[in-house]
Length: 339
Image 1 (tube, rainbow, N blue to C red):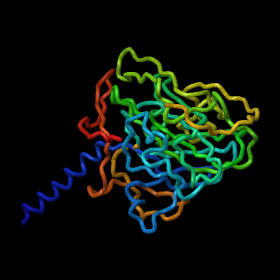
Image 2 (image 1 turned 90 degrees about the vertical axis):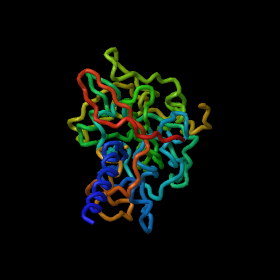
Image 3 (image 1 turned 90 degrees about the horizontal axis):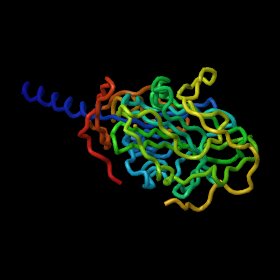
Image 4 (image 1 turned 180 degrees about the vertical axis):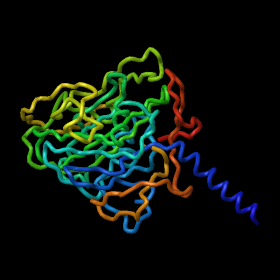
């Protein structure tokens, strides 16, 4: 009996350990214009009764989207459908995306885009939306934007353009992880916000891009190669008030890690949307809130802990490589999630 108990305990540890190593990440909470909101918590929210209404659209787990041409790259798998709540934010205010612990070897660019919901975001299908860039950062001064995010408590801060016309918008924050050469991993997350105040700017023309479509012509680099020195950020010029977003949640001390041109604040007559012509996230994949499931869109998880092996494991696959003395602690045999 003692042997059996020990064996069961060892088996439980063995089941949990690989999940802890193969973890990725997702947006666990946000601060929108100074107010805290919980993100969609994929390992607890689906099982709560009632299922909580969030401002963040659902993500299936903490794993990546692997196909840049798939509709899953818009707001993650199933993210085309609306969430149950909408946050309010004044034009010119900040949105802070707080990710679960991001793996140090998952290096790559970070970007924030927005699109008009043309009405109620809760009923808005994002599959054919046109997006404008708020900010984006890539590789500068020997550092990736993902590193800056990690150094600032796994947070990325974006500023809603002050000239933007009032209305409901999706705001999309994404990390692209480039650690697995030849297989970029996309981690998109979309939140629903109602912008108040502002100006009369409605982005149009070259300021807009389709997703999928944004990455159609991108040549993703081998970031571990000795020949790697730079990376051009995909997409149009940013409409935002600053030249880039920042992993630093303190606006007074934030420093851009990449440059992009400010768009004009003049009004545009055309709609943000047109028919598309263009052609998932950390120390544990079972990273969940240690408190009871939240039922309010404004509830913010107070802490995160590693759950038991009963929680779903991540479905992304990572491949490791050593270069320039960097040792990446990641398991390479994790199964890919296919879409």
